[in-house]
Amino acid sequence: MEHIELFFKSVFIDNMVFATFLGMCSYLAVSKKVSTAIGLGAAVTFVLAITVPLNWLLDQYILQDGALAWLHPSLVDYDLSFLSFIMFIATIATMVQLVEIIVEKFSPALYNSLGIFLPLIAVNCAILGGSLFMQSREIASIQLATTYGVGSGFGFFLAILAIAAIREKIRYSSVPGPLRGLGITFIITGLMAIGFMSFGGMLTGGDEAPKEVLVQNEGSENENTIGDDKEEIVYEINNDIN
Amino acid sequence: MGLLSKKNRQLITDPLSDNNPITVQVLGICSALAITAELEASVVMSVSVLFVMGVGNVVISMIRNIVPSKIRIIVQLTVIATLVIIVDLVLKAFAYELSKTLSVFIGLIITNCIIMGRFEAFALGNGLWRSFLDGIGNAFGYAVILIIVGFFRELLGSGTLWGIPVLGDPIDKTGLYAFGYENNGFMLLSPMALIVVGIIIWVQRARSKHLIEE
Picture 1 (cartoon, one colour):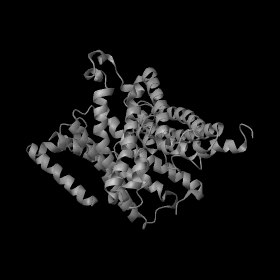
Picture 2: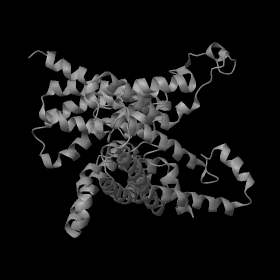
Picture 3: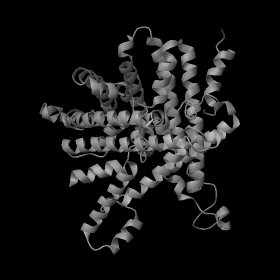
Picture 4: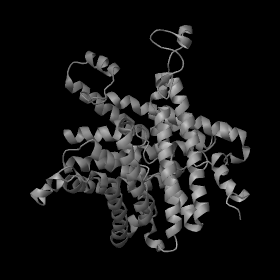
């Protein structure tokens, strides 16, 4: 249950692109065609699913205040958390290169579809952001960290897929000249982000649940109906996007 | 060539308008959007980026002939990460509240594409002084957009600038509020940053037609 909650939270409520604006650069640059958008989205999900748990281990056993105690009791006073930026980014850069080599060796087909995106990803803010948010939100276990990584990656995937589909269609509309291209993409993303804000009340008991949703829920009979509504909304959204 | 010849001056002035890193080169959007709800945070973010860009471009330009091109990405990331750690520690020491507001976004300067982008596009192929000018020029271009967005979002969203109320008191109904004006709380939410940047792009491209796409 904890896992499902965290997954939906990271896909819809704390969506990488719409709520925290991470990975915006590649989101804007690679969203002109649906096929390339899918490639980048999949690569981001893949790399996040690997690097977030890895950095969780790093954070837990090396970087946190007193984390070195497992090595020797006298090391308990050390707090290396100021090194986390450099450690995280080093892990990410090496992992990305390692993944690239492994994928190239064992699955040329996957490499052909993901390969060109992998080097781009080392400097994608979504990846480092995933690890930094994992650290600042104090995710409790490595399983949850994996779920968080996959969830955030999937959120990015959904976002880039949606905008790519819209951009393919909007080419046929007469957008005012100066807005064409970048400008209208910004405004559409803004509108989509407003839409995604309505997911804020999806999980009850969360600290971010706005009041309006709580009022709505008073009408429903018990917890189960809320859960059903949630699944229905998710299902509908998935259908819409597909 | 003088230190501030015409060509060198262009390195600073171009990014302010026709070659702006955010609205034209599309670099460094993430942080531009996330932290601009207040003017103060935008200015601090701009200064941090100015520092990292200026120093980083000089360092990269100095070592550009020593570093093999295969490992240059990781070398660049190390240089940026070190500079960002300095910024982060300084902020934590002297402006703790603000560093809480900016939270992970200071760390995300590391992956701010503006920095990598300028390293790759400029500092790797140019001398020290020119790289430095390019660095601060682009950081100023970035700062201009951040400050415009921060200005409008804080003014329209909470009626203050730099935390000081400028439109009167919304509770006592003084100043503009006496005429029934209300703060638009929507401006403080993150999606509005995107729309404000969209409008800035619109205005800019309407003024200089050659930037219009297609």
